[in-house]
Amino acid sequence: MDILIFVNFFLVFMIGASLCSWITYEFDNYEIDTSLRNKLFKRSKCDHCGEKLKWYNLFPVFSYLFQNGKSTCCNKQINFKYLALEGFAGVILLLSFSLNSIYLGIIALLVLALVIFDERYLEIPLWINIAMLVWVLNYHQNNSSFEMMQNNFMFALIVFAALLLLYFIFLKVKGYAGFGLGDAILIFSICLHLGLPLGIYAITLASLGLLVKILWVKRYKEQHAFGSWLGGSFLVITLYQEFYGFAGLASI
Image 1 (tube, rainbow, N blue to C red):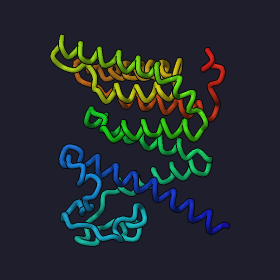
Image 2 (tube, helix red, strand yellow):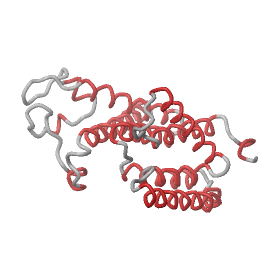
Image 3 (cartoon, rainbow, N blue to C red):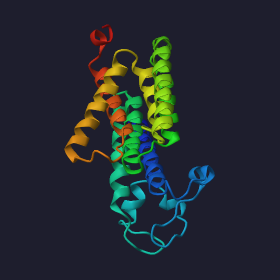
């Protein structure tokens, strides 16, 4: 039994680390390689000499440790970020698994990916929005709250339609988009999961956070990432709701 528990923990850690490894590669090559086939099936290469990595180079965290932080092809130092990020993601998923809340570990990794992509590229990749929507659907189905999510659907749809209307009005009047369609899709997922009034609270919290950031950095005419704040507020409320409950608040 002890061996089985160890194997389960090891596999969960490796899944988290592997997901982070793929996200890191996707982040580094986001505007370079846009081919869906390459994103899913292209073999990883050495950052220094470009040689395709062997199968034994592809074990997150452990390959780095066994190779003493150096590539086996050209013996150059591997960026420490791989070890740090993969280890962090593995621990996050492992911790959530040990607390019987694997769904929270997954959404934490998705939000982390959303933040780094949106802050760097001012864009939410479609795969992140799809993954978060799938997470919402699976979460409610596995927590016997699918009916509650169905009740949230009309609210989410109304908010999404209003955002689309604002998007096209702003595009028509100003000649450019005031916010990204990725933000609108993300808000739909947030409202579908949280419903009223928590969905409004999440949007308000994200808006206040972004406003404080803009006032702090005093960059009023620059574009700022809103999706990362939405993702952060969504995660905070979801975690609080999971561990402390929002029964009284949700009944308002």
